[in-house]
Amino acid sequence: MSKRRKSIGPTINTDVRNQLNGEQLYENYKVAINQFNKSLENEEYIVSFLLGVSLMEERITACYVMLKWYDNILMNEEEVNDVDLIKWDTELKPSSGEIERTGIGEKLSLIQDKKYISRNKKDEVVSATLKRNNLVHLSFHNIDNYSTEVCNRFFEYYRYFDKISNQIKKDIDFLKN
Image (cartoon, rainbow, N blue to C red; front, side, top):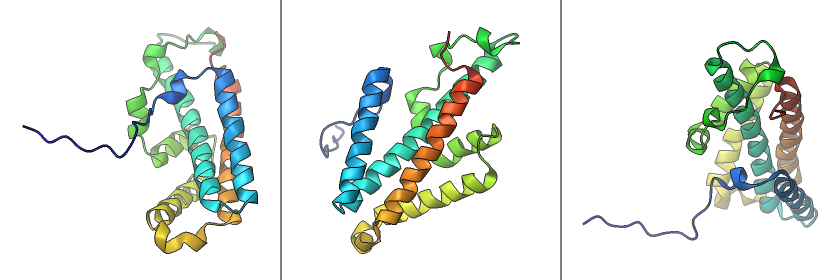
């Protein structure tokens, strides 16, 4: 008889993003950004930090998914001479499991390989995520290290990758047909 693990709370739906339409996604971003700003104003740095990191990672993942999906399509198409002729076959979209198993460094490597970020920017963001890990995992020792500057750094990365994701959408004509 196998022992069942105790749950630490409600199950987190990691596929929630795929279940949202554009309007719902926009609303979630709006709520998150408003909460980030409100928490920062109220010096609730941990809340702002978590939201800033989440927003940044969401944008990096969006960039990765679009580029990986596009690569999968190109590898399966016999001949694609025109971006307008691409069919966004959902069978070729990276699965939620694949996306979850792909680390931030690997996602950034693909974005760099496709020339959307420099090696220096990739290294900078990887370094920031390592510092983020240390800050989170040692929070009770580092509670005073959460600050406006730290929160804003991750929010700036979010804005940076948001611009890149918009550029990728234009370059690959994402989901236009």
